[in-house]
Amino acid sequence: PESIRCYTETIEQYTTTGGITDPSHPLMSKALAKLRDVHHIHQSLLNSDRILKLAQHQENVGQYLRALKFYTISYRIRRDALGDTHVSLAKILNLTGSLQGKRGSPQEAVQILEMAQNLLNLNRRKEEVEASREGARGRMHFSEKEILEEAVTARNMGVLEEQMGNFEVALKHYHESLRLHKTCRETSSSTHVGTPSKSSRLDLRKIHVEKSSSFGPESSDRATNEQLESIEGSMEIVIESSMTTYDVLYFTDLNIGLSEDGNIDFDVDLAITLHNLGQIHARHFSSFSLALHSYKNSLRGMTEALGCDHPNVAALLGNMGNLYKQMGDYDKAYELYQEVLRVEELNFGSEHPEVAVTLHNIGTIEYCRGNLSDAMRLFQDAMTIQVKIFGTESALVAVASNSIGEVYERMDNVEKALLAYGVTLHIHSSTLGSSHPDVARMLHKIGMIHFDKRGASGLSDADQCCQEAVRLYTLNGFAEDHFLVVELLRNIADIRAATIVR
Image (tube, rainbow, N blue to C red; front, side, top):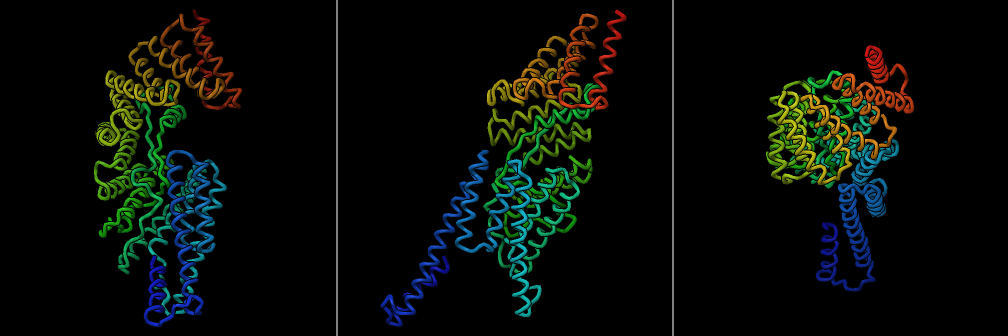
């Protein structure tokens, strides 16, 4: 727009002051040609931005293939208008790489993100050369927006490495992302040239949220780590943003505080980084103190930027609750989950999937604290919402029915426990396939209920269920020394021994 204004004023001056009215005059012809070129570029960029917003919308509603097509079109329009080395292309490459990661194409995603890195590095080198020529080395004009784009690229690389199980490498990328955040803040503070442009990548209503449910240390002694991880994985709910979230260190470690200039996007961006650093510490390194420190700083930033009733704040509180639950502090987890429930009901209403997950999480706390009636009520409330939204054969309904079965089992109500577990088994069979390992796990669980709770009358059913579980494990390639198979064979031996004694 500024270029269009300048060329328009130039043409007006030629006409009014210079008396040049002939469009074929060399000066007028050149100015008109420049105005047409700039206007064409401006319209192209507007079209690129509109298509970019369409791509983000399609990504947010889960239409990944459509989003990929729109990102590609937006990239090509901008590239044709500005050239294939323009720094603004890095933003679209970052979005596209992040999307490919979501689509389960990590290698393609890495290639796209490497293109973004190379593009940013090329522009940084150009700035360094220009600064050197002007005798002002180190005083480059690489803007905060471009530095922030470098941070996003490093973050996205970290996300992909984490998805591929390379957690140490992921941490290095996240730390680099935070270093660039610090540089961006210092650049803004030292130059006073304004704040980074508002990012079209980030939907401030949405971040990556993990909401898991498990039974904690008071669960059945047969609940192996793998089984609990399976339960938690089934309960994971993701509120996805238009860009994958990223993570690194803390405000306090590098003296990075909240922006004093009202730059909400930057503050939320940094808060999300800290949030995900907490996740990687909690998930993959069991560094609970580091995770908690990161979560607390993230919560401070998110609350200051968006207010205490924002859904992002609820998401952070939920993950802090998950962490306290892992640490065995059920009272603190319960307190945080109650606040999450308040914020979610305020924003989404009482029959939203997120509300159901939070009710389930509160139910797990009540279960761990021995409040079985309260746990049952909460699990049933969560299941009612999930059935209404997702239908009777949803994976989330399977988790809820399994939880209800756990409560009935602990209450020694065997028949109702078996009915609830039967619902879970049916859903697993119909959604995952009748030979899936999760079906084998449920058969093993049901078999041991028959053995432990029904006495002699349950031995035949117990043996039948466990034998079928062995068959399915074998069919799925589980070795005889796999801990699930070892435990199952030991249980079958106990069943056979009890049958002989009888």
